[in-house]
Structures are given as structure tokens and as C-alpha cells.
Image (cartoon, rainbow, N blue to C red; front, side, top):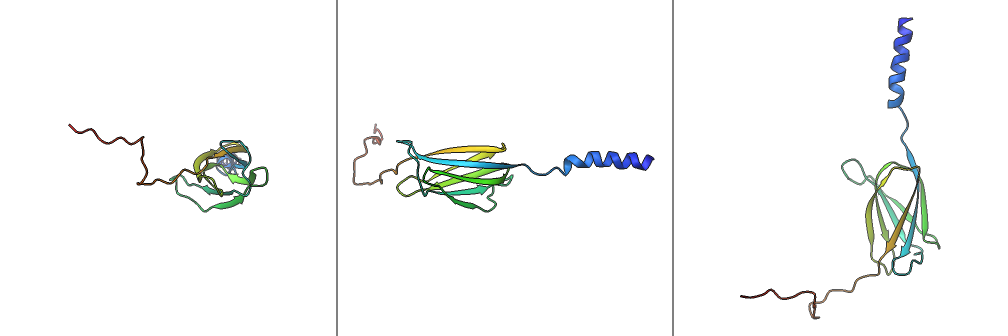
Length: 130
């Protein structure tokens, strides 16, 4: 009888340790920052991160005509999201995945002009000389 109680106690202690990992279903919506219109055919790359912030592989997705894409059964934890679209500035940010269903909204900026040393840049003032 004593062995039965010890076995039952051991099982009660071990059950929480054997609990399965939690998974999330994520939806990502990509829109243009200036108009809010969806960006279709944008490449969305998901990089799950380990505890040290190192990438553990990647998952490649594409947005549909409404600028949406989704992925199911993604484990909880840190996730790096990278979005690449033609005619848009590349986006990248880290997110904490900690809910059963999570939505990420991304606003892509227009590309910046190239910097030229042959043009004047009023925002850069020459240093003052004494």
C-alpha cells in the first residue's frame, strides 16, 4: 500500500513536467503604410528563435490578395518576422508568441531615396569652426 501512494505521488509530480508544449495559430496582415491597402505576394519569413536569440530554421510564406497569410501550430516563444515586397522597404521585427491565436499587423514603408554625395543635404550642417 505504501508503494501505491509513492507511485501516485510520483505521477502527480511528473505530470506537469510532461505537459505538452503550447502552440499558436498566427495570422499576419501586410499593408502599405501610407494608404492602408493590402500588399499582395509579399514574402513573409518566420524565424523561430531559441532562448539565446539564435534562429532555429525558417518558414517561408506569401500573402494573398488581401495581404494576409497564416501559419498554424507555431510553438510559443520568440519569433522573428521578416517581410519583403517589391517596391517596399524590407521589414523585420521580433514578436513574443504567447496566445493560442495571434494576429500581427505590419505596415510597409515606401523605399527611401538613395543617398548621393553630389546633392546638398540641408539636414547635415558643417561643424562650427572656432
